[in-house]
Image (cartoon, rainbow, N blue to C red; front, side, top):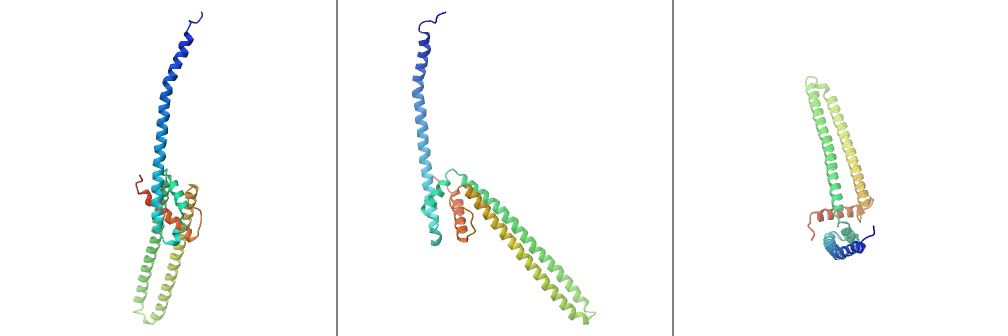
Length: 221
């Protein structure tokens, strides 16, 4: 059977009319998307300006030797890295881990100090018993006194060495934690962060972390 005259025109004509109807709709959608993109960029620029301005104000609070190491470009790049909020989350997570670690290390040190107190108490108790025993044997008193003094000195020296060793271990663990943080922040692309043990560089990074933390509690426009 032959196709009816105009059947193909009907199909084509319908498509043509649909396309004609869709074009204005697509144009409106594109316009809406463009407007949304413009608004998004404007808001992003406002946030960037806000963060950069606040960072500059914070940097001005620092001593001159640190201000010199926080140039405009660094603060601008740092402000840009904060825009999507990821850096705030990373810093918050690192701080939580650090606080847990510091509490754990503090607990260990307190336990050691308390153990030493208990050991001193037991030693004093034993020394008291030795001195009481000399009441019936006074000729032993000089020997006992020398023994007591020697044991006290030995214990104090041992306790001091154990505390010093514990403190050194704590410092090493905290230094390692700093390095872990530097690696994490550098991998995240946060400007100003890289692995270093130079005191002035570490101090600068501490200031930057403080800046980020303070900005995290502010409400940008």
